[in-house]
Length: 467
Image 1 (cartoon, rainbow, N blue to C red):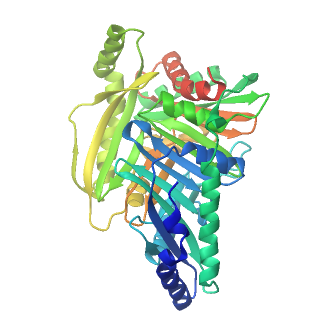
Image 2 (image 1 turned 90 degrees about the vertical axis):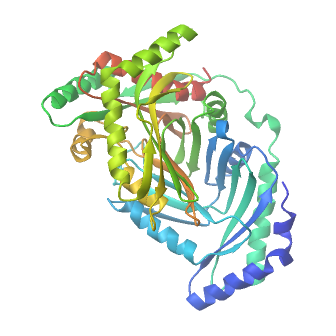
Image 3 (image 1 turned 120 degrees about the horizontal axis):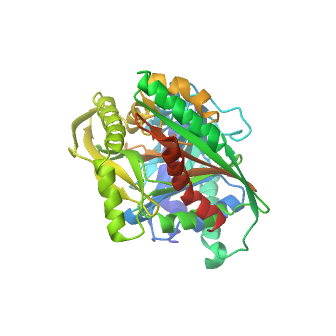
């Protein structure tokens, strides 16, 4: 880890002086961001070490694209709830960024997680997880194809002095060095564990909800409803989140593997669903809806893919998502383009209908504006949105918490990426709660939809139980 330029006080004394002067002038703390190029390295051992030390941390990695972000510790954070939670935290964090002092080429950044719904969950499963949280980490590593950047964030108060700020930066570098020295076998083999399982709701109850939903759709109450279910694992020893994430990123390289860990527990998964990605004002998003199993041979796999493309039920389910995303993006984007027909996204255990979309952000628009406008898409909620969201809590009989909510990061330059937290699990010591959902439309069959959720639970079951 090449950190000498950060450790040398002379290299950053000018930026520290500017930050101190700005804090005194404004009468409040300002953010200092020091960024430097860094040698490429695996970021997962850093997260494992941070979590072992009880430090909050986050990881987002898309191995196939050679992109990753690791965030360690908390320099600043805010929670919020209510319908305007995303806009509220966007405004608060952008105000912090507007006053920031930067030394280096990279912009300061924040990690964020927004629950599926606007209220902070009050159930036992999601206790301690707010409806929305934004964190500016003490340290972050960002890997793109053009290299790796290290960012150190420090809040400089009017009462600080240069020696105190330099000391904080030096201690953070020392901690990163220690965490970066995690042995190569830290993610090695461990004994298997015994476990029990329980479903919420029970499969028969969930299939009854599917049947009730198809009746509602036939009556014209809505066009689509996504019903989720949960599977709880209770093991004889604590689950190893680091090993689970290592298995997810190895087995699902085209997905975004994520891990958000803190005092309340660890939320992790490997999601194929991009909500919004922005770089230099260019927006990428995608409609993902319609699912089939993978075949056991190339021929059977191709047959299943062709049947998915030809399926009236799946094409209708997919079209609802495409239309909703297009409508939501109109106020915030220019030159929106997408393919006329969906393509097949193949994952190791399932295949989906996928329609990628691109656009240019309109002047003044921000990534979080798009996130707030898009979430929840009909891929995880339903259509019409209000009618679907009104019936979901009773129909599912579970609290989604952060499942199917937007998780990701954004920086002061306006770049960032948010994915939809599906194919995910909440882990607390020996208990893990896994979530999966299925889109219900006219023609949905309860048995087939239950089978689909079982396929979608496989990645986390395999990662946590090492199947």
